Image 1 (cartoon, one colour):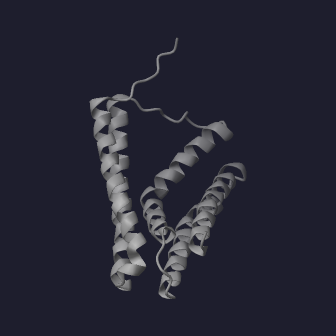
Image 2 (tube, one colour):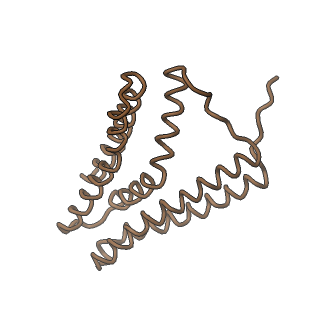
Length: 181
C-alpha cells in the first residue's frame, strides 16, 4: 500500500478520533467550546489529505486508486461531514450519556424523503470529488499517469446512478416498520 493510501486510513481514523474527542469533551467534560474546537478540526484533516495527494502527484507520481479515493473521501467528508457529526452526537448523547430523545427511526414516505436528501448530498460530494479528479486530470495532462483517476470517476458515476435508483425505489417500495410479535 502506498503512502497516500496510508494517509487515507490515518485521516479516517483521525476523523473519528476527533469526533469522539469532541463528543467526550462536550458531554462528559461539559466543555462546549473545546468540543466545538475538536469538531472544527475535521476540515483540517481533509486539507492534510488533499495536500498529501497533491504533493505526491506534483512530484511526479502516477495517480493510483488511492489518489482518486482521496478525492472521493474529501467530497464525502465535505458533503456529509456535518450530518455525520450530528448522527454521532445524537447517538452518543442518547446511548452513552443517557440524555436526550431516542434517535428517530424513519419509515415509509418519511424514510424515502430522508434517503432522497441523502442522495442529494451524494450528488454534492460527487461534484466536489469529481471536480477534484477532473482538475487533477487536466493539470497533469498525461493520460498514462491519470488512468486510475478516470477509472474511479467512471465507477463513482455508476454508483451515483445506482444510489438514485435506490432512492426512487424507496418511494415505490417504502421501508416498513417491523411488526413486534
